Amino acid sequence: MSSPVTGTFDEVKGHNGSVLYRKMLEMAVFIGAETAPAITTIVNASGQLVIPAGYESLGVMSKEQGLALTPSIEVSTDTGYGYGQPIRRDQKSRDIAPAFTMKETKRAVLEAYEGMDLSQIKAAATTREIKYDRPDRTATRYVRLLCIGMDGDGLDAKFHGEWLPRCSLTNVGAQTWSEDNSLEYPVTYGADFDARVGTSQRTFWSGPGMSAELVAAMGFTVSTS
Image 1 (cartoon, helix red, strand yellow):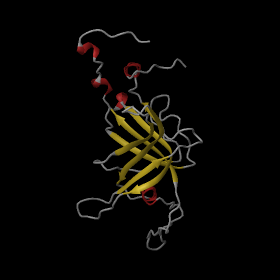
Image 2: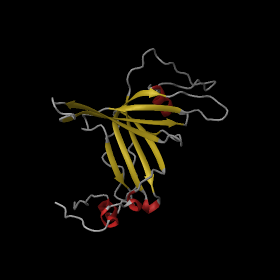
Image 3: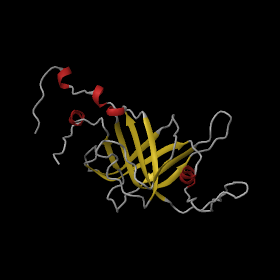
């Protein structure tokens, strides 16, 4: 049990924004097949990022949107006669919906936007034309997403990672052709529980900037092993 804190308001308020404010100044999203390796860490012993084989970057993202990770919680409430407020609340489910807008036109991006496997599509030998048809009903395609953001730089870099091991496409945004803007590929995914790894979302905070002092300021302790 922690000890009481006594002092002036400035002494007890517990604000530490200069140390604990995080902003994702850079960001990348990697996609892998549902058979891609499970991710247990995003850094090596030196704090450098490690992206396993089987994951490919989806390239440049829209600066305006960035990456949106929208959670939703479904709660069941139980009421009692004579009580104005619920007497019990039970969380039934919690979902996360990653959404982002890709800006590079390449196979991995087209597959993510179309929800299709295009690995068997070949460019025509003489014209190099690439052609594919969308079926009447596209089969659900499960993928693994690894989202990594960076705050700071060099030895002060802090990485925030979200690994979503079982995602499927739930929505796509409009594609606008204009003189002012490049083609964009907006997508929204739903993240399901993956029984093989025991989670629907694995979160990482790591990098060379994760000093013992920062870990303590975040309210965690450093393992002795």
